[in-house]
Amino acid sequence: MLAKIAVDKKEILKIYKKIAVNTHKGIQGHALLIGGSYGKIGAVCLSSKAALKTGCGLVTAFVPKCGYEILQISIPEVMVLTDIKKKRISNIQFDFQPNAIGIGPGIGQHELTQKAFLKFLKSYKQALVIDADALNILSQNKAWFLLLPPRTILTPHPKELERLIGSWSSEEEKFEKTISFSLQYNVIVVMKGAPTHIVDGETIYKNTTGNPALATAGSGDVLTGIITSLLAQSYSPAEAAILAVFLHGLTADIALPKTGFQSFIASDIIKHLGEAFLSLEKK
Image 1 (cartoon, rainbow, N blue to C red):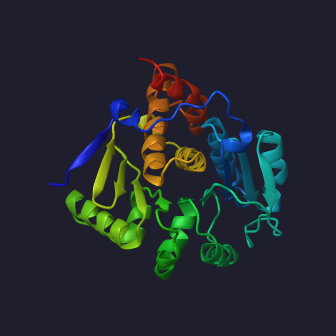
Image 2: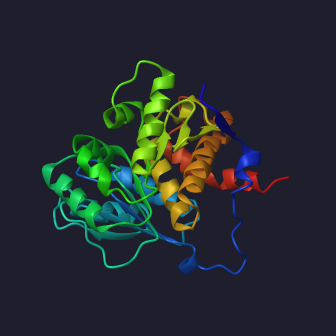
């Protein structure tokens, strides 16, 4: 059997860094979230807001033109850059150096978007989180795996994982194939599920927080924002993935007595991030 490290509060406190009293937004990291398409701008709104609420000093969203007003109105704290196309991303361009990028939420799989993603992968080699349709685009173009920056974080749900690594006939085979994939391409795989596991080469971390309330639309988009934010704040890729998954689950545990399973939505994850952080600082 494969050995798994349980991610509990004791483990998290080994990596969690309190905010310095003399910090300012310029040194709290700048995260860029790339995504959205017509009808799916909400995904980037969730990711961007989650990145801010996780402590990032600055957050910029890159979206199609149709998302400009939506983001500016719904999250005034987030800066917005737009593609030349109205309904989809076709050419990813930005004039600053982000500390980390999250790409994929709501991005769609249009041919123009796929070409833009390939061009992006060829030029960007820094801290990166890949989620949602960006994962599905990768699955259709497996030669692109070689373009991934070292220690890229992939966040697939079970079906997206299957598209990446192929099918499996047992839990053990699933982990073996994921470990092999992680080692081959030097990536970290966040295997979303109940529970969520983080696979970093031959090291497997099993998260201990969360409940079925997280099985709701947009939950993964929020997780992408949290991971990207922590990466931008200088956590290592493994630390960012582990801490983000723990906090993400913890918000649902904190909220459950108030919302119940049925009424919990992805925005509630963001709403309860503050309480999740505060709980880490309690004795």
